[in-house]
Image 1 (cartoon, rainbow, N blue to C red):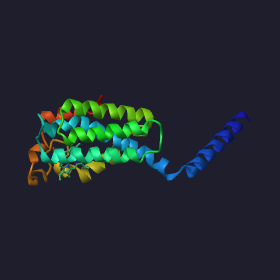
Image 2: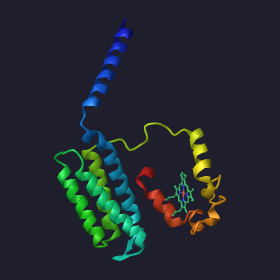
Image 3: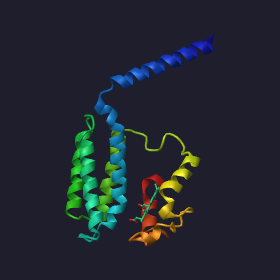
Length: 190
Ligand code: HEC
């Protein structure tokens, strides 16, 4: 009897949350994706800006263009978030980050600004950052064979049949130490 009551309660809760989902305005539904993307862009910028600018000069035009684009994209996403007391300050800090990048400011400053903004964004608009379920290793293995192994090789050694056709096969393997350490500094590995 008690179990039945519990099941009933759970069912009505599910019904309630389904109803709530229908009632939430579109802007609020778009929010988790925007927060997650902005957070990841900031995390990426904090680590990779060093590859774009050094001592006030552009080191790589393409990396620098990416940093400029990412910073603008963060600003746009923050402006689209539902209003909250913290939002305006976050938007201001994103604009500041854009300005520092436009001036080709120092790496440490960009890293500090980007990491700080990412952390406070998550505090104001909490969203989960980890996948909600473990990866399916069987289908991911098939996907890797199908879409990635041609360049990266079946064992990931970078010697796939198409690797030699690339203009920059050396980027595939072994992972250059600077890139490897950049990848390791991303927050997902902290
Ligand atoms: C056409 C060839 C090609 C295919 C197909 C390919 N890659 Fe790559 N991948 C590359 C090259 C070249 C690099 C190095 C790029 C660089 O350093 O700028 C790379 C880099 C990477 C990196 C390192 C990125 C980083 O920021 O350090 C990852 C991870 C990766 N590939 C995963 C994948 C996955 C997953 C797939 C399949 C879904 C895939 N790749 C398919 C050529 C390929």
